[in-house]
Image (cartoon, rainbow, N blue to C red):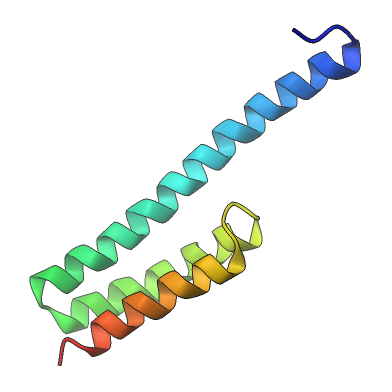
Length: 87
């Protein structure tokens, strides 16, 4: 348990930050699932529209440091490839 005032404050700050990060990570996963669901239905137009909306979400979460920029790039690249492969 934290003994000093500084350590107690860090515990409070960390808990707040953890909750915020958890919500953002959840938003990221939801965006990716939405694109995958659109790809699974086979509607290329809907998949592209969903992808365009989700790219900004993925980028903003990477900018905040929740995930690494390379991981964001990898997600976007693989999803884009899957949409292009739809024919």
